[in-house]
Length: 144
Image 1 (cartoon, rainbow, N blue to C red):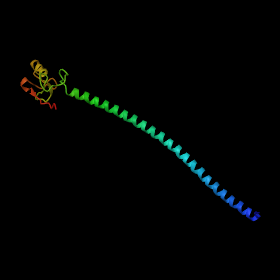
Image 2 (cartoon, rainbow, N blue to C red):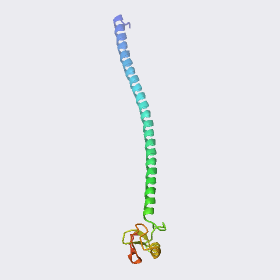
Image 3 (cartoon, rainbow, N blue to C red):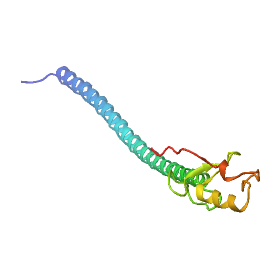
Image 4 (spheres, one colour):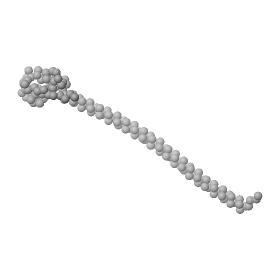
């Protein structure tokens, strides 16, 4: 069968139109692939940023923990100093010879330390107010 020129031209035009549509689809797919590549690059950047942020947060947490431990240690040292006899510097006890006692002036001591001191001097070793052995009062410690 012989194709007429007109039929051949129509077929060529149809193929050209189909080819243009396919070219548009390919261009769209190419743009889509480029967009996906950009999105992957952005995702990788965000991932590394997130990793850096996590590392920074861990470092900050470690620094905060270290500073907190130092502060707690300072406070414990202060508590130990405040909870010790100013005569012998040993910590008070809830019972026995170094039991916590006070004088009328309110100052605190280990019992044997202040009794020994009062045998030699009738005054509080801190404020120098007059004190005698009868002024020694037991202080109850909450040991629980």
